[in-house]
Length: 473
Image 1 (tube, rainbow, N blue to C red):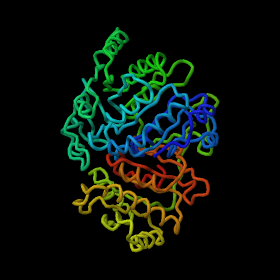
Image 2: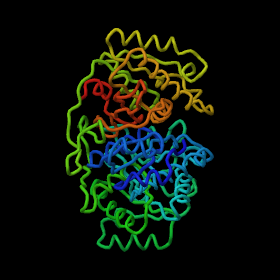
Image 3: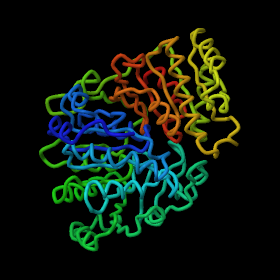
Image 4: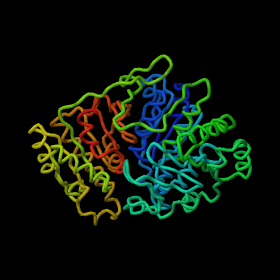
């Protein structure tokens, strides 16, 4: 992924950008989009660094995002893709440039290396410590004394990450280390200082942060255990942004939530720590929603659609349970052959016809590889090919049987499938559940222009999330 914008183009168009971010997968990118819109910022999520004309088409923006696939990249692939993106984001004039990671920080030295990406950002933005925000409470992600804990599913127990029943067994990047400083040291960030929950609650937090930064660490890691900590972290981020520009932040959407929770008096803050399932917030940007004079997103109610199509590539037990729940609710469940789907030379006509037959009967469809043999999963390039094949399936089905709203489940599936479509941008339509946004596709002249698209990570959403997508509830 390379930049199409020159710094002069971007800077001349954008004067008021507060926050510019790159998401290392699409589902996480849309989670950040959801949070900044909920917090009152006008935002658009582009598929590549936008040029001046693309920015102008969306009007004045507070937040510019670029959705990417760095989570599935090798360091060499990052070297080719990320520097231009970081230059483009910096050229917007944003106060903060954010490298958005998965909320579980799952990554490895050879694939999706957060440490390598941070070093590339520092080489572009100038030598400075990266500000790492370790938690995101509304998704059940908690960082305490530098160790990461994560809830299993939406209502499950909280586990230290190296004991998490799913993340410790992730098929590509199994997390065997909960200490984020140790985890990221393996990826090149050898000197990470910490701001723990004790320091965040102290009367002299500013002095403690300044003392930690005086040793010029590679990064500064902030604990986050509860929503109130986001305010304390946000204050420190804005303090540092005033001293250096743009500030480099790293981590999940919690970083954006912290900035919004502690937004200086000139802006409108207020990110709630929890968002109830099914809560809806109208999105921003041209053609997506209305923004009040104060810049706050207006509430709206999503409408039901007659049918939907979900394609699921995640092998998470959470997604598996959601598929079973949809089956019981009357969705047609179609098990896809992952080998056939991943073969770019194979005809997908049999799979397409199977999906179309179900849709023509008036029913909704969940098509999946979740329960299929995963013996090919560790073969080089297979995950990418499978995701691209999933995107191809959705695109070709919709060319014959248009739908107003569809969904993709799985981080890699969502990222690589949507990237293969060649669309321009996404804006938020509404928030379906914590970590699950429904976006509107912007792609002038493209057959997918205007559809609503749910992008859901494997761990995200309640058991009835697919039915909720259909019902708009």
